[in-house]
Image 1: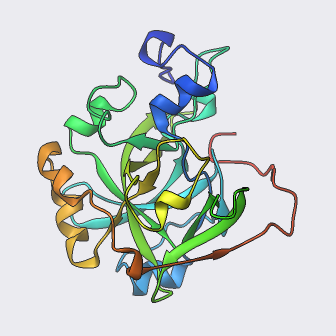
Image 2: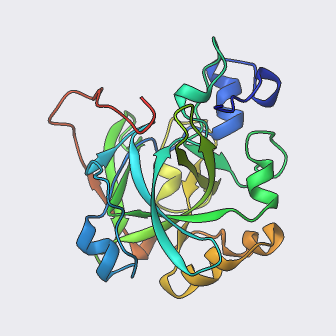
Length: 246
């Protein structure tokens, strides 16, 4: 039988300010790597299932985990609590989790204290930049142009049809003083950023089961290591394609 989180296990409030305290106003879509990048750059066998090049909430995307036998890629739902597992009438955005509170909030704390850390492979992610005084969609990636991995948490779900599926969230940290990331999001909002894990630290991040040690990896790359540029949309912003749990 599928396990649904009771309403008491989730934040009951639905207004934007309260949702932001839970997940933060952050990146909600990104570009995934292809099969070759997963194999060549990250050294993992790609999942058998297909995924979209650009993903949004409740889309399926590859993550990298270590369940004790080395790094492996799984296809997982972008959002820690998939829509199909929310109690009736509850709406919750769980694509990003604040690292400062992940160990306290009921939604994430079991995964945080169990050391269920994952890597979210990307080519780039998108943020609203307010450097000009109005929101502009910007694409952010490495200055080298190569793929990279973002720190995340993951968990499994049991479905009514007997399948075991997976879901993930991205960990974020404060970026108020980062030269690049502080330009993102509305003036007056706290600035947040995804955390890119350096390649030489990826294996240790996945193997680690100590949440306090994990915090030592949650630092931001220098702005000089990143490249950001305007990326206006050329297609409708609300793409409705089936996710993993639709």
